[in-house]
Length: 140
Image (cartoon, rainbow, N blue to C red; front, side):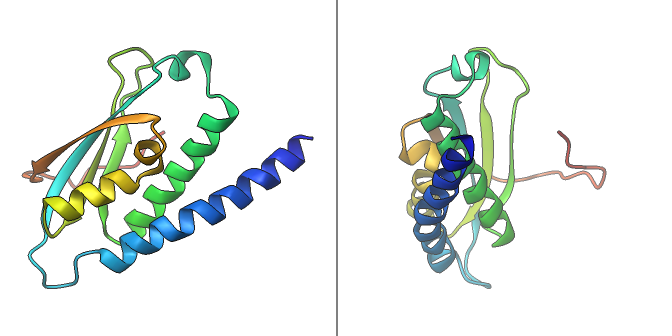
C-alpha cells in the first residue's frame, strides 16, 4: 500500500509541478534585464505540522515545494532558500528570488506549492543581498 501511495505522490508531483515550473522558467527575467532581488518569508499555516508531523496531503505539498525550489534554483530564479531549525511558532523559511519587478516576484512566490495550496503564509519584501561569504556551505 505504501508503494501505491508513493507512486500516486510521484505522479501528483509530476503533473502539478511541471506547469508551475514551466511558468517560472518561461516568465523568468531574461539575461540583461533589470533584475531585482526580493525575499519572501514563509510561515506554516498549521505550526503543529512541525511538531506532530505532516499529514499525507501536507507531505505531498512539501515534496512539490522542494521540487519547485530545486528547479527554480537551477533556473537562477531562486538565489537562496532555507528555514530555521526551530519547530515552534517562531519557525519560518526564506526564499530570495530574482525578478524583474514586484509583480513577477509575487507571481513566483504565489506559484510556490506551499503558498498556492495554503500550507504556508508568505510575505514578500524588496531585498538586496549586500554581503555574501565565500564560506557558505549547504547544511542539513
